[in-house]
Length: 233
Image (cartoon, rainbow, N blue to C red):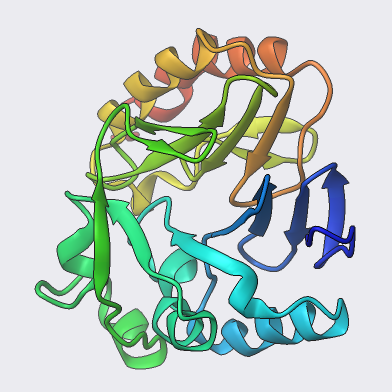
């Protein structure tokens, strides 16, 4: 988005657009500030720059790159986009070492061989309750230790990252094998259910604009039995 009304990617609602892909990257405008939420794989970063160019919006309008968590499909393009936009990267303190390269992110060998990401310096470490423009940072650990969601209380918007995703018209958790602590991820759903949410903007799937509280309640009610059931003997 830009102050002149140009849309980068697909419009969702006023001030919010989506650059779709395996991971959704969101462009969020609040007043004179523009934020990019998540950056996708590193190979995707050039397509994000292209989306800005096609909309005739300078990518330097992006003031901050906000990461919901450290997984490579969400932060892989951060270093490249940081250079292009001259915008600082922000993520939760618990995930920052994986983003800036101080620690190697846990992943399988094949992922290490085929999925690369340059470390990106983290300018701001986020914590529970921080404000980023109109957005409030909520710590929802489980998928990763530092998973966060970004909540606009005035507009009842939630950028949910992988704390909750959309799949075939329903809300879900990502595949259990990718969770750092699955029980914690299930627990984090409880706090999301307490929020007044009218629009949910997930990291995977499509934006949800109808029945968000009902869909969240359905997920919270069946998540313990569906995701935490013991494996078959």
